[in-house]
Image (cartoon, rainbow, N blue to C red; front, side, top):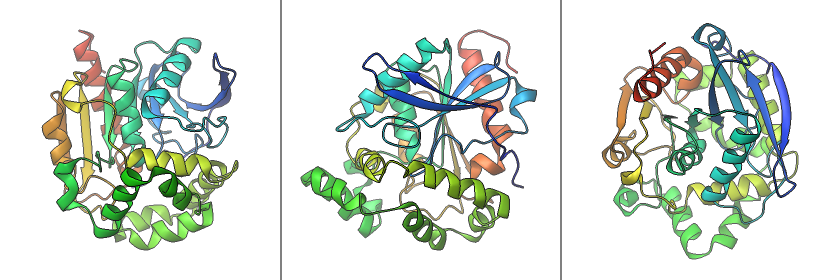
Amino acid sequence: MIRGVVEPARLGQVVLPDGRRLGWAEWGPEDGVPVLLCPGGATSRSMGFGGDVVGRLGVRLISVDRPGLGASDPAPGRTLDAFARDIGQLVEARRLSGAAAVGFSAGAPFALACAAAGVVRGVAVVAGTDELASPALAALLAPDVRRLVEMAASDPGRAEEFFAGFSAEAMWNFVIPTLADVDRAVYTDPVFERVYRRAMDEAFSQGPAGYARDTVLTMSPWPFDPANLRAPVDLWYGARDTSTVHSPDFGASLAARLPAARRRLLPEAGGALLWTHAEEILRSLLERTQEKQGLSPV
């Protein structure tokens, strides 16, 4: 069942110390437990999830546009570490201490980078991209993905130019045919499609450079070692997910490298778990992060 695709309750921007603006959107009570959403690739802050449960769970969901996408100013040459610093400054400016994070699809490395930097206290990776440049995954990658990962390693500038050839319409036409039936039913639902395609248009509103940089980062080695990450991490994957750029083994290798990871592979689900299993994802994230702090779980 698709639920919780609703308009943001609040929209805004934070001005960072270097003068750049970082755009955000919020759902849920302003005094709720802060949960930062790192959206999937080629989408914007307006694509939230769990709009029907955040109030009941006491969650303040904050989705953030990465630099160069949507309402966030560009930061050419940015890195995963730089993004984590941006989020640290947003957390301080908006008094979001104790925040957890959700990383969906290509947003997963960004959420994990925030945990590695100590900016968030726990992460839910949902249908998340693994470290595609890891030698351990090379044999599992689809041939076209392997070629792109190799290009990002050997000539990142050329790779960025390649990804800059995409647009919102091209991304839609690329994604939809690759989906399993269970996910295509979600993405082509009239309400969902309208919100999703708007988020894609917003992501490309400044041009393709932000998306291109994002994608090179997801195909490059991570600047942190997952084995050193002690924050609790939930890994959520659907066994019917046919994406070639999510974790090719449904998060098994990622779970093995994360000391505090708990992996859940749902046999009947696809990759659209944010919108089919929102309550379970948020409730588990709250329970794990609050238990770590010695608080009563929700």
